[in-house]
Length: 391
Image (cartoon, rainbow, N blue to C red; front, side, top):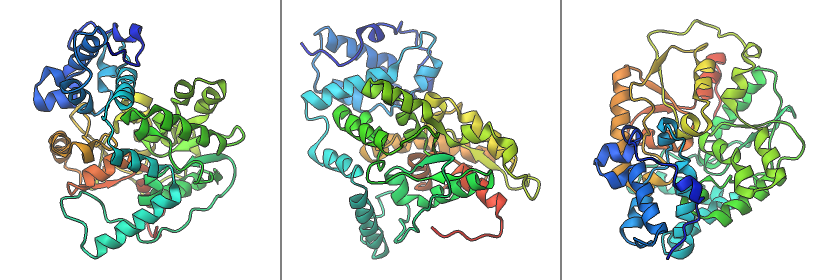
């Protein structure tokens, strides 16, 4: 009998009421009970009791979850579905071939920042030579990225792995916005703080994620706040206390703040916009799942943005866009079906630009032709309308 690496008390909290079903993107697309949080928990219980096998259909049910955790927000019993899914996938990764060798190699690369930067530049060259198939949904990667520079020591900025390699211009915009608010920004050693381990946790690679977390802890000495401009990374960093189970990790997690949340509490420090928001150029706000459902700080994005642009809300109740970290690459058909609902909601707003505070969501939506920008890129452009800031 297989014992899943989950808390038995958490596993029995689900009362199968079904209130989670309309909030689950895979259930909404498939209509299949096994693709719902309720169905997945029932499958976990069957494996735990010895009535079902760990492999086969069970693996597929667990693998096709986007881990958006919208079910947690809707659940009246406060079922910690994210914990259950992480523990279940950790069991699959340890006892089956759930995570293939090439996936393990890809995840390992994220922890070696110089290698990642080199591979990204090679991929950018391949794009220019038209050697990358069009079916591979990637943005145009930068050939060269200007190095970021520290501007002070009031707060740290977590720069991460893929985001620093592919979207460093976002970090540059964030540093400028923080500077406009009088905040000096310190930057960590990217060799130690190059990856937060979020994708490793999602894949069930607990030991790899813990090793990266310990390295990140060492990269941020002192007690200055650590600001994060990526929703997925922020959620992972704030969970280090549970991941590592140490007082040091818990203290570190308390220093971590989403950059919008931190700025929203210091709104008066930001300069007033040079012009009133243009009602003819609205911006639709897309909530990344790990900002809305895990950190639950998505309102801060609106607080900061609404001073500078006219906002439009989506009418889909924050349903996932289908990016899910590596999910869009591993399950493109389901991811694209989920994304279509988001695209329809964006279209209904009439906005030509979308604000999203997570790199995975940005890349996934941009691959469908959406003009997606990080919220603080939009603020930076409003504060410096005539400036040119090449990455």
